[in-house]
Each structure stands twice: as structure tokens, then as C-alpha cells.
Image 1 (cartoon, rainbow over the protein chains, first blue to last red):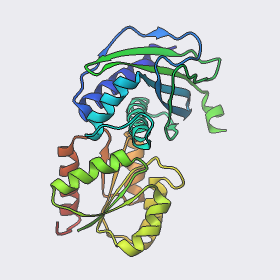
Image 2 (cartoon, chains in turn cyan, blue):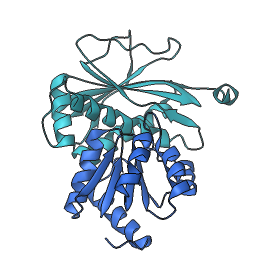
Image 3 (cartoon, rainbow over the protein chains, first blue to last red):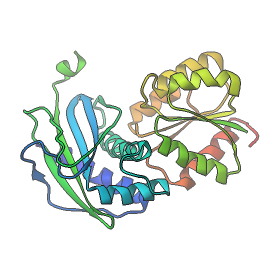
Image 4 (tube, chains in turn blue, green):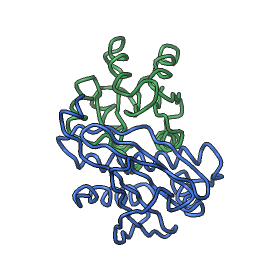
Length: 159
Length: 124
């Protein structure tokens, strides 16, 4: 995958976490993901379509997600609650929305977010799109951004 | 002042509500998408709306277009992750008075609300 597609997501997660949670993000070395099992127990998922297609997943251990959600909302939320899912969904929404702004002059849309909670769950993306894992360390623990997107020919995107 | 918050995320509505309360606004109605908002504007008669863009059922841009058919003056602020210039222009053409990109700080949202009300000649 083109490194230029990853950089906007790195900048975006740092921007979102520092602005909304005052949480610095230390980004590690990206790597290609093997298999479809999510890295951690909580996943916020967004689909991208238009001149880029694919999925972006924010994967977090439940403890880390709970701490981040508490920073975001100002109060603790149970991982099984609707409020928890809503907050995780809004986080991945902001990360993808800001990243796609870096694809200026490209017609790209993002889906409404979905959130999955559970040990060992899988998120399958298109098999022809490699998924890049971006490990991010924060004071609340590690989160991983899983980016599996690719450009689409303009004629196909318009169809 | 009557303010309507239109966002499918309860978390985001709560954050905006807390900023509005700090500014002294307490008469707040919430809607979870454009359709829900259109069904409430008649009874609530908002004097300011904060509208998200990406929402299920009816998105914020469709809401703005529909709302502007019936109301040309109530200030509308788009609060969204859609940060591209083309999107901002599209929203302004549809009738939005100001634009806030998520993520935002409480100070930035406060500034934009105050600025919008002043620009639209609405007494805060």
C-alpha cells in the first residue's frame, strides 16, 4: 500500500486524540496485517467508498477503550452499553473524517460507524486490499489503527 | 434562546450541550438525524441549530436544504468531520451560516456560536 495513504491516518489519530482527549499518541512502526482477526477486543469500523474503497478499524483492548471513552465523555461507561458504542463510533468517525480531508480533490465518502465488542472477533475486508496495522501508544494503553483501503479508478467510482 | 442539536452521536450531543450550558443556553432540543429534526422544528422553533453532516435516515446537508425551504433566517452551524473545502462550500451554498470541523475544542465551538449569532444579528 502507498505510504501516502497511511500518513493522513497517522496525523488524524494524533490530532483527534490530542484535541478531544488531551492524549498524546506515539505512533509505532506500521506493519502488514496477517489474517482477519482484530488485534484487540473493541473495534470501531468505518467503510470508505468513492475514489477510495475499503475499511478502517480502530482496535483497542477493552480497558484502554474504557479509559479513552471516559476521557471523551467525562464519565465511565460499561463496554456493553449503547453509550460506550456511541463514543467509540464517534472516535473512529472523527479519525476517518479528518484523514479523508487529506485526500483533497478526491470524492470519498465514509459510512456511519459500527462498533463490535468481543474477544477474537473478525472483521473481513476485501481480500485484494492489504491491511496496514498502525500501532499507537497512549497513556491509556495501546490502540491499533487497521487501514485497508485502495484507490478506485474514477470511472468505476462514478458508476 | 432555543437551540437544536442534530447529531446521531449522543456523545457528541452531550459535549455540545455542555459547551452551550457554559455559555448560558439551557433551552436545548436534541434530534438524532435530519428526519427527526424536521419533525421537531415546527414545535420547538429553534433560534439556532448545530447540525452534523453524516447521519442515518437523513443527512445534515439534506436537512439544511429542506429546512431552508421553510426558514431562511435561523442560523445553522454545521459541526462535522467533513473537512474538505468542497464540502464546506457545498454546505454554505445549501444555507449553512458557519462551519466547525470535528474534533474541536470547547473554546472553538463557543467562538463559532458567538460569532454566528453576532453575524446573523441574533440577540444571544
